[in-house]
Image 1 (cartoon, rainbow, N blue to C red):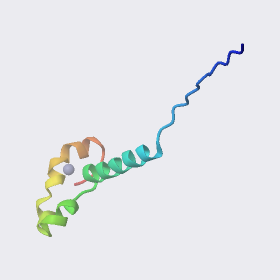
Image 2: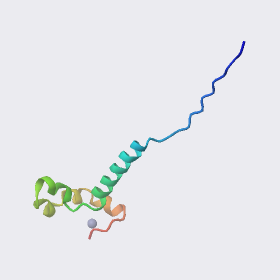
Image 3: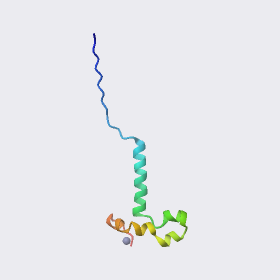
Image 4: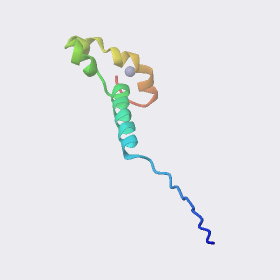
Length: 71
Ligand SMILES: [Zn+2]
């Protein structure tokens, strides 16, 4: 009678897809917080968005706290 033992060694692997999705979210977040001057809203709102600067005003304090210059 033979006994066989199965030892499962699981190595934690981070899925590449998860990294890609998180990197995309990071990139969009970085753009929104740090660089947007009406670009995103101009897609639907047109040139008016560059005067309104809604996202810029919304993230203004965060932008300064994060060290992005804006004025
Ligand atoms: Zn500012």
